[in-house]
Length: 117
Image (cartoon, rainbow, N blue to C red; front, side, top):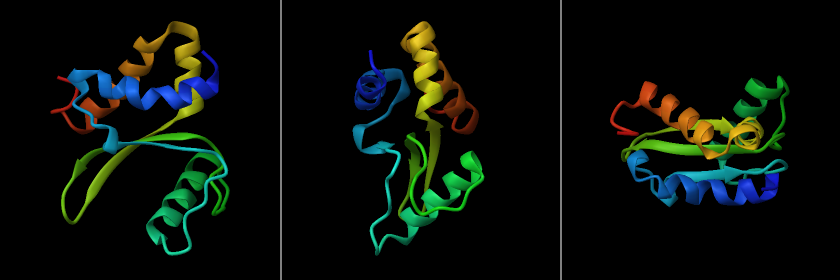
């Protein structure tokens, strides 16, 4: 499977994993080059934070592809976990979906034990 196919498929694969308890609306793939809408301050800050953490660069344009999974959502706050899609694809290319699902599930169990039962 090519990287683009992986990128377009990963959300549905996660939703199909019933033990992960994820819904499609809680999974978002962010693409390199993405910019937040002019009135989306939260989105702009998210992109800046990702760029600073992963690329040590200040930019309002996303510099890589990322998977974002919202694992907890209330009226006032939501908590999301992000994954570098390139590293997930590398894991997939080497050994299939199992290591990808394990990485996502392991990180979510650590942060939110009710997931991935």
